[in-house]
Length: 628
Image (tube, rainbow, N blue to C red; front, side):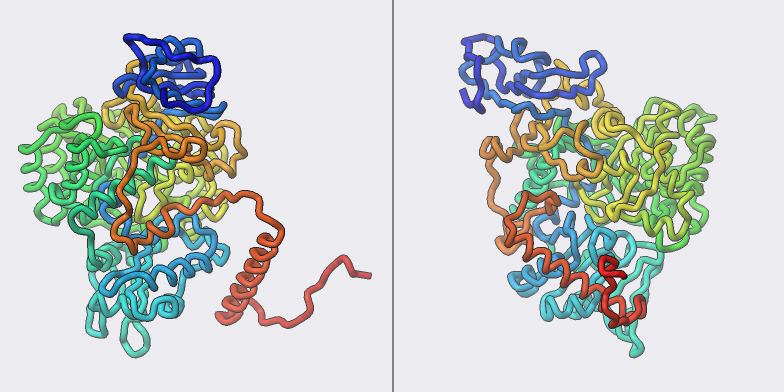
């Protein structure tokens, strides 16, 4: 019997022996019939027993793997309802992740070190998962800082949907020069001599950012599989066992889906993926949708990889942009082509998801749906939903409910909240998105991250945002009336996501007959102080009865992965998300870090003085303790 330290449980030779038993736990099942338990048993990837230690004891055989949770919290495996997992996997090992990095100083040090090991012809790329607001300096890197850190290696740093900073070498590698025209919806910032400075602005379209990134080298062959497997392991690290892939730009079907298909065939996926198909070429969307309808149907696949429908764009002209540093885009007439796309899908039993940031877009889409509803196409049993919906109105939510729709919200404002407040004010931010109003109408509301190019893929950052209403910069956006309690937030990340893929009968809760997808947490989600929610990780993640991630006392119980390739990969040296919680430090190390913090503070002050943002005062600091 492979086991953690246990007492009082003796293996029995039994015909119905479990493959895996988790005991001595605080199990939150997510199932109203039995919300709490102490143990569960798993056979053939499915939960067979949920109860107390005495209930699972008869199912322990000589081959059963027994895991002692040591009194820790166990939850159903998390399900990110909007994650660009396929695209993220193909690029993961090439990217230097600033997710969770507390200061720009640390980020630049990582970048400098990575540039030194990156071979000629390759780029250093920082792509999403961070915001300037998370840094102690509260600012972006400058072009000069990138040039100093990497004088010869191309560096591309993406900041949200707003901008990108390129060093001199990256401008050359991307082919930008004085004669390069600004693309539609984007701006190449230029100096007085007309030469590009290294700043690219989405104005408001992020296409300029992503098309520039697309010029960087990509992985080939087995490296794509290795990268994807390591990305899935990184997601497992946080207790994710499922994700709904929202497709996206530069994710062509079937070419860019081939890697996850091959991994699924080999039984090497550690995360269940329900995927969508996104027409890539403007003007060709209807032809693409019609071709895909002939090739496959939603729910084709299996428990690990399955088609869930079309989207998150159906036609390009109907997509608004979520760059909150820019005014809301005014979309041209798109209804005629949009109606054809929706009709084609609904008549052929295809569900879909729709990217819609603003209520103005949602209202126009709903008018098309209501026209088709008069013909009986809504509601017709096909699953469909709106994504994002930061400014959806009460009236729009009523209309969505009447048409049988659902919602998927993401914590984009935990990274862009400050920009949203500056443009629309704190009143609008208080209801962005109107989560409580969605739930009060009985809508299914799944939760996700929209990672990896804006928000981090760490779901606990999103769960913290759902519960606290605060950004990563600790700005309070949403008042208590538009927040949710911890149990509701967890249900949005488990049961609701399962409902969006029609799998709510088999996953999202821990009960007999459901998939054995679960996580043993580092901290008790229901008991830790609110700010600490974002620091939770999984210590043991199980997907389909397989231990796919293991740390701390469980280290070594998970499946072996091939080494990160290529060897110069940033992930091989820094890993992925930078954990924010640190153990207590020795006094000397504390003093050293305090000195670094003081240096960073003085560096930041000088930066502000140089830009006229703070007075250049050399006066002696005043200490009120010495006041007379």
